[in-house]
Image 1 (tube, one colour):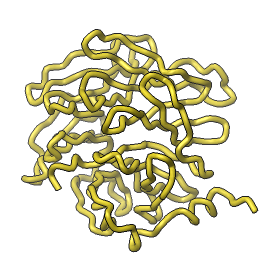
Image 2 (image 1 turned 120 degrees about the vertical axis):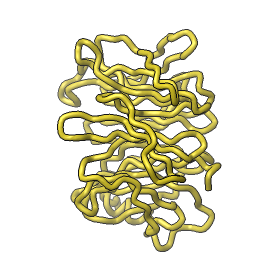
Image 3 (image 1 turned 90 degrees about the vertical axis):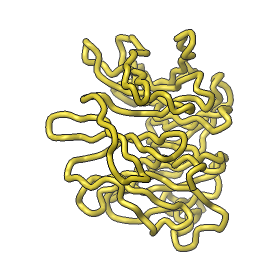
Length: 298
């Protein structure tokens, strides 16, 4: 007998208290569980052991780890503006304030730059690169359509990002989201083969052979993966819930993602083949957008 989405998910998940041995790593993630929208840190093998990283009454959302795992750059949204801040986890203090109205998205593997997103002169999101810690800013994308959610490849030579085009099928979405890859040396851009889906929120596997991404169509949002040359596109998680924000673990063994459920969003991990799904959070409200801490620090 066929199972509905919730029954299928429940049959695969393992509650936090019984997570399998051998899992390791830490996730930064966003939560509004205590009425304040803050960033927390979780040990995957002990998900109940939480560390709250931000403590303001504003909203902090969107973040990027430095390659040594010491610094977390995040976006601090204030009443009428936002700015990037950099938290030193060893000192438990903010050590850097970035330019206003530029959102951080990804830290370069060599630690020398960050990818940022900001509005251009025609009020479209574009991708920028900011040197660290000097703060020199260079615009990378120039397009009449919006470009966002950039991620460095593991070798630092390419960037995958989302470009938003006019919808080919407005019954599916009001816009098409397509994955683009830029070669940083030449600035050449390649459009990965797309459909009328909204594809975005991509993340590279640590070996650079795969890109996991969030894909929305008439049936909802799912997780998929594709090779950087556009081959091998396949479904990973399609369980009846909306699934978003895939993030590959540093050892390549897991993908963390957000499961949008009827009354909450929850953090889940799954193997790169779509098997062995495990629920990390189970609370009313929002627990979402996990980002793995680089492994060298723990």
